Image 1 (spheres, rainbow, N blue to C red):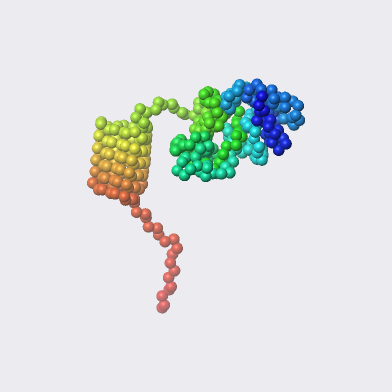
Image 2: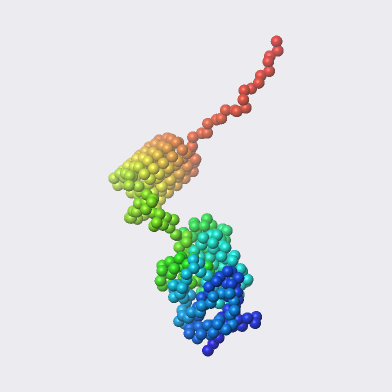
Length: 370
């Protein structure tokens, strides 16, 4: 029978003692050692009863061979009674104090905190030029390198990496690094771990499945929970059929079309035969007939008369476009009136700033000689 990896001798010590000492120094009281296979379970249990004399309360459990990490957590989930749980490998040799990892976990209120270390050699240095590297952890962090936004371990070479769009805007700035390596030390909030296991019943690997899922779920978590929703004036509506958003008070004329990717605010009205594409119209806008609005923003209370053509422009509140105005790549200031049948390209149209009177006070005159 082969000796389990956890019982190998390293520096005149059994390998598992390094992990146990790390847990003891971190203030952990109860440890569950999970072994794969009946033979390994018997050997580790015998070693623990005869040779371990530390302060930890050890319990040895066996799982069937070839059981992956996420499946192991699912099997022992009922034995996790504390609010947080630490998961690490029995062959870990680490000089990072767990108390520092715990502190970061509590301060940030994280669902999962993982320990990362800089790789000793770059993946590119071990790969032929022009080839994608293997055994790379693609790790997306925020600008302060404190929040995990994207996690993709890749044993095989990848020519491209797909990043969820929501991860790009969640932390302000996303930095994807390949010079870091997962050290297989995880601190979970037990409730969040159980929820992740329930949400991903087919997950088998902690690193490949659960941690990426929790990183994605954290940046998509609901701000309003079910216990708070009844206290707020929330209204549930079905997703619009045409992928645009219009307030119920909007009025559209005959043969008027609002394409996908548009938003129309409260009380906005459009005349006949209008076309709106990739644009946002604020509240109480009044648009005449035969108007085309493409890739533009109209703020609140904007008036657009018949026959206007607006492209790639921003029009501020209370502005007024008279008939047959053409705007392309323009900015129109607050309350500005664009004259009838005029065409403007790449211009900024705004009211002139009023002149300020001098605030130096009354002037002193020298009395005339008499």
